[in-house]
Length: 256
Image (cartoon, rainbow, N blue to C red; front, side, top):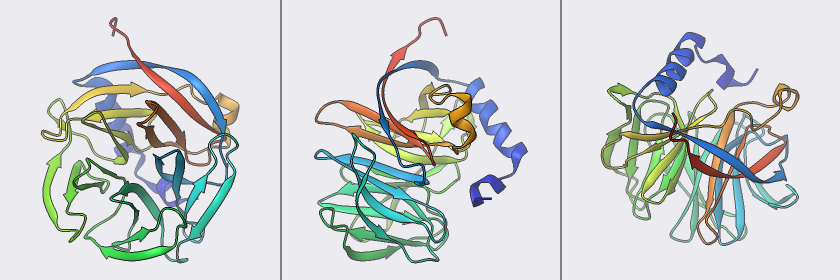
């Protein structure tokens, strides 16, 4: 059993209730394209930059950073993490890739063309999701808080608490910064939320249940992975050990 499945069930159910029941508008989606995805990839971070799809995978002994071919799902290049490191969030900033690990308090910096290790850095607590507003590294740690880190010193410049209405929203996981908002997976749910980076308020909710058929979901783990192709305005999502990566478009449902 992977470590995420050991989370307290009742706590997870309470978070699902908060996401479904509070505050922001709910948004529908449509699938524009579906691409193969490596079912051995326990997806923790997903990044699309300059036509290249980068992926961070987790689990002890299996964690990697990799370049994946979008159209086929083939792994074109990969770098393995140490056996005692659990890969987490991934982001591209200032010509480098930054990757978190779960409980070791260590992050890694890679050259994006080769995935060769360039450096490492330290942070307090757990590492979950990672994105950037172009200035700061923005990380989640499993709580309702998002930390904004200086990408040079890795000092915490500020912290924002994520709230759905008046309730703190825990288990914020994979992150992507799109159009001035932080898009986030909520662990062990089919929901993505958008977060105002200044206030931490959840502004919209996206229910992505139904991406996989019931049969496909039997062999897959949770929804996790958001990548935005800014040049072509395309959004991609996948999950841990999912057979597909989906290009989706969100559509407002005014009846909700």
